[in-house]
Image 1 (cartoon, rainbow, N blue to C red):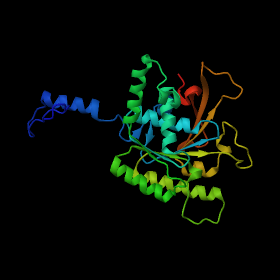
Image 2 (image 1 turned 135 degrees about the horizontal axis):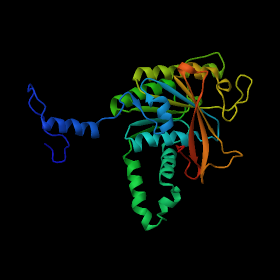
Image 3 (image 1 turned 135 degrees about the vertical axis):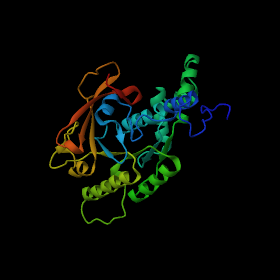
Image 4 (image 1 turned 45 degrees about the horizontal axis):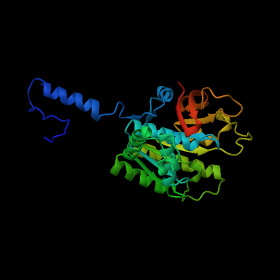
Length: 298
C-alpha cells in the first residue's frame, strides 16, 4: 500500500459479513472520491441548481445575452464554480477570446486584483499568502481552453469527443453560437444556418452524453421586435427554443437602478425549459462589477 493512500486493503471475497475495514473504505470513497450527482454538474448558483437540478448529461443549455450584459463574466463565474470550487473538469471553446485573455480575466475575477498589480507584486505582505493560495487553486483547476478562431461545428464535435475520452471532461462550454461555422451549404439566411448549427450541437450533447452550455449573443431585431434588455421568449429567435433543452436569457438591471448592496447589482436569469417553454422562471443573481463576477443573490 502506498504511504499516502486513503485506500485500505480490501477483505477477501466470499465472506458473509462486512468488516470495519470495508466500511472505512466505503466512507473514504464516498467522501473523497465521488460526486453527488454523477448524471449532472451543478452550476454553483443555489437558486439555479434548485430549479434545474444541475446541468444534466446529454442536454443543451443555451444562454442568450445582449452585448454589455456580462456574457464572459457569467461564463467564467460558472466555470469557476464548477472547476475551482467543485473540482469538475470543464472544456471551454472560445472563438472570441484567446486562452491568455480568458486566463487573465479569470485571475482578476478570482483575486479581485488587476493583472498589472499582480505582475508587479504591488500588494501588502498580509495579502500575499491569500493571493498565492487563490492562484494555486486556479492553476490546479481542470479547465481546458480551445481558442481556435472561426471553429467549425464539425471540428468542435470531434474535439469534444476527444476531450471526454482523453481528459474525462464533465461539461462543455461554447462561446459563442454566432462565431461558429459550418461546412453545410445553406441557401437560406443566417438564422437558418445558425439553426442548423444549433441542432448539430444538440446532437453532439446527446452523442457525448455531457451537458453543453452554449452562449448566444442577441443584437438585432427579432420577429419585428427589438430585443428588450431582459428579453422575453417572444423576443428571442424561434430556433433557440426549438433546439435547446433549456433556454436562458441574462439581464443586468444596472441602468437607472440603485445597487442592491454596495458594489452589487441585481441580475435576472430567465429560464425556459423544454416542458414549459411558454412559462418563464426568474432566478435572481448578483453582479459584482468591481471584479466582473456573478454570485448568489443571497
